[in-house]
Amino acid sequence: MRDVRDALMVARNSDDKLIRRPISPHLQVYRWPISMALSIGHRVTGVGLSIGALLLTWWLVAAAVSDEAFDSVQWFLGSPIGLLLLFGWSAALFFHFFAGIRHLAWDAGYGFEKPWYDRSAWAVVIATVVATLLLWLVGFAMW
Amino acid sequence: MAKPPQIDIMRSPLGRARGLGAAKAGATHWWVQRLTSLALVPLTLWFLGGMLHMLGGTRDDMVYWLSGPVPIVLMIALVIATFHHLQAGLQVVIEDYVHHDWLRIGSILAVKALSLLLALACIVSVLRLGL
Image 1 (cartoon, each protein chain N blue to C red):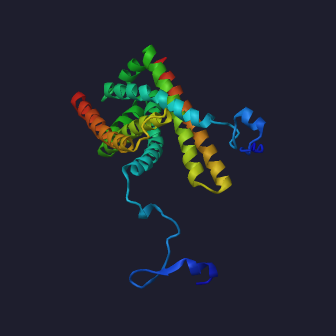
Image 2: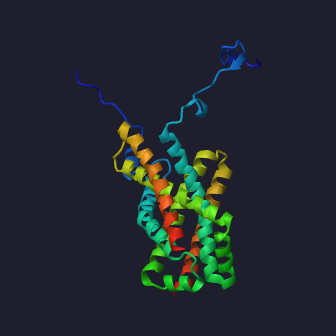
Image 3: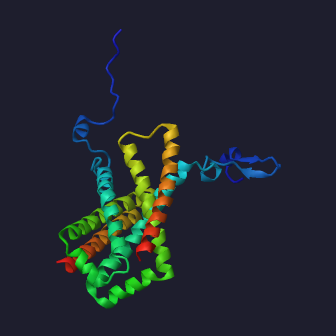
């Protein structure tokens, strides 16, 4: 202890070891409610999709530039890494899409009751999985 | 006994009349996020349908697709809504996590500039393909 203010911040735990008291409830002490995971997921997928927009730009610009440029995009997107990126991108897009609709419903004043809060969260998760799988099944069937 | 009059709000009447808070822009940013997201609901579904349609397609297929009057307009609308929504969202993320003033302002401006340039690149490309 250097500072007298630390006197209140230091305590013994059940093993009689000196520890710093936690200063406030933080992420690691919470049980993860589904709505918390969705909130973080909405932000993470938003940032991910922003980076994914580079893919859209590359695709459109390459198509406008030349056959060779377009072929290289098509080759990349068809490669294992490209397909994995596209799969992650489509899953993130569906998640952000459905979670975004949940947000719009809140903005309109609906869905704030506790049971609906959790139900709509699970609906987002299920809709994301179903829509992503459906898109890829249709995609492979049409390819 | 009548209650003495008291001031409940710290905002000036002029500030209230203008409806603008500390951000000096009122709820504009919030509205931009909601309206672009609303526009992106149908546009995204249309785009995914278009992507399935374009699967394994050649450059000529794309030119043919985008030369239709509806796809070219919707594609440009999608690009505008996407990048406008994207920069508004990233701005909020940056404002939340970057606390150093100049770094925050700089990265927000960089995101906005980059989004604008990428959106313009997309629009020019779509026009070159479709017109």
